[in-house]
Length: 230
Image (cartoon, rainbow, N blue to C red; front, side, top):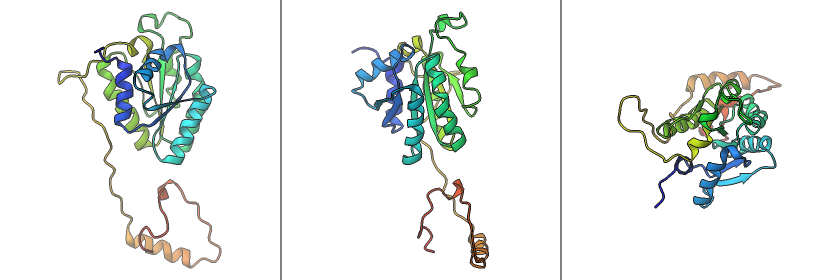
């Protein structure tokens, strides 16, 4: 049996998070990951957009309408740049999206190689909550998990950069050793209950008005008639 590559584990970890769709566009910088999709029977499903910009916007729309984290993918250099439009939409609309992008081989970085872009600097603003590059296989679980957790808890875009040669390295899990960072799946959401007295005071103000206008923000996400029996 062939040894599992970093790209194979990436898809396995996404499946473990319950990710069902990834929106992206092919390119040389992510060939290793695309090959892994063939070995994984297209799970999670790779949804090919017409262009990288659209893959990011599709991930944003998916996140907005499903309440799940949106995953988009692009190749190195120009492909990664094209994701920015959709990622800024996610940032300004507070939508959880994770961008996974390729990069030139580690041995070529810093050499003005074909389509080489400083992706950490490129994503520093739009993915200011979390952007990181994977340089060794043992780093992947923690970086991917954090990218997803930060995106979901901060409702913001995050970015994960994986050089092309790293994608095809044999995967090796982090060990319980010095400078190895463990990780885990899932998020435990707290149960938040509003203050009954504060609700009563607010109701008095609203009931006392004759032409009431309400600007309802993200704090009311998921609220609906009958949630508290009122």
